[in-house]
Amino acid sequence: MAALEKPHAPGSYDVVVIGSGPGGLQTSYCLDRLGIDHALLSADDEPGGMFQRWPVFQRLISWSKPDAPASRDSVEYERYDQNSLVADDAEHRALVASLMGRESVFPTRTAMEAGLRAFEKSACIRVRYDCRWESTSVSEEGVTVATTDGEYRCRFAVFAVGMTEPWKPVLPGIEHVPHYAETATPSDYRDHSVVLIGKRNSGCELADGLLPWARRIVLVSPRAVQTSVLAHATVRPRYFQPLEEHQVGGGVFALDAAVEGIERLPEAGFRVAVAGTSWTGGFVLEADTVIAATGFRVPLGDLPQAGLQTVLGERVPALNPYWESVSLPGVFFAGNATVGAVGLRRHGVGSASTSVRGFRYNARVLAQHIAERLGRVPPHARPLAADEVAPFLAGELCRCSDLWGQKAYLARVVDLDGGGRAFDRGVQPLWHFVDMSGPDAVAVTIETDRDGVTFPGVYVRRRGRLREERLDPQPLNEFEGERYRRELRALIG
Image (cartoon, rainbow, N blue to C red; front, side, top):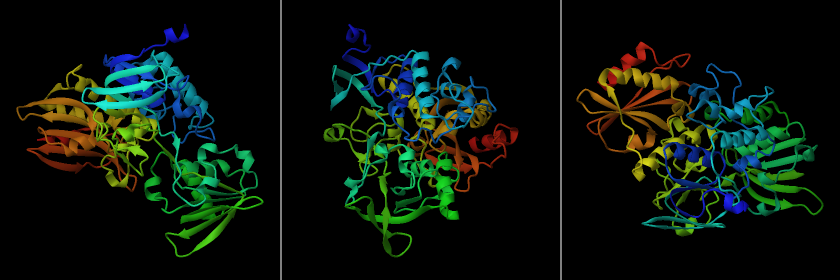
């Protein structure tokens, strides 16, 4: 009887979404609001995705502020809450923030998981749980997804399966050490000498969590941490505490070195042979514990055999600006796999697509794009009078949370037809706008440079040529004043 009550029976749909983590829930919500017939499937038995298991030390690296310059039920508050999913209606917003205490602005894993459950219930998102994706076939007619419950046929499939598969590089002896995903409780490392292979999110998170317990911590990876970029990133708190300990000699060492081999000792412990990359020479590290904090990859199933191209060491799918596979038409990705659409990497900074604060906006743009491709909704094109364009764009620079959540990655676009009319074309990927040919148009975005200076970026396309302008920063990021309207009018013409 329970199986009969499950939503989304096998059959034909416009879209099939796979995954009930934040990427899948956000995509389903947005498709539903656009009236797109779709099935949301999940191998799990409840929402949450990776937050049912990670981060291992239970506190996120992205923040949500209980109190902020905007009220919690407003769209503007999204800028101060990096973890809740976004919604059209006030009652579905800021759900993670509403479940947090005030001991930290970084929510616990359980608060994040509870926020996702609350979003599913509040927004009436229907998920077919305990339905595992098993195989896929792609043809000119569409995509067929085979599951443990049967076959689903669709025009477009959206895989929101996260970056949840532990990944280790090919290194001699790496098989002897646990992955980040297998990390024990912090107290198990009391008085240990620990070597962490990796100096990015996973490695620095573990180092931060082990500071009160481990005797010595050594983080090892070939590349140096880019502190000039990191200083202005949302993951800064977890990175900088271990790096500060390194600078002051507090028992933490961050080595720029390549691991040449890992040897398990007969009695206990390990030897790790390393060779310097930013310095000459090498030596052997002795440790009680070694952990491979080497990251994750997207669980792609049989998609590579179907022709899916990948990037970043075959860890994520190669995607176009609208998060569609470059080699499998009709196959899209949502959630943190959208990092496969690399964007322009302005100022050396990548997208925020690996985090909820970024990919929640990607999902909204993706849903609109799919709805337009299906012919279910017309392209977004709200008319604007010529004298409305500059004030509108200046207001978006202040209030459009999409631009702040995905800096230099998403942009607000207005088409200019030269006859005194204009059309608001909504939020689009900046990469798409810059690379495409099309009518005269202007796009605005928010950017932060290597020095941490935040400013409006303006891209004007006239007669097929693109002009890029950087407007001056403002101490309180108030870009709506007459000065900015005047500059925008001058650029637009």
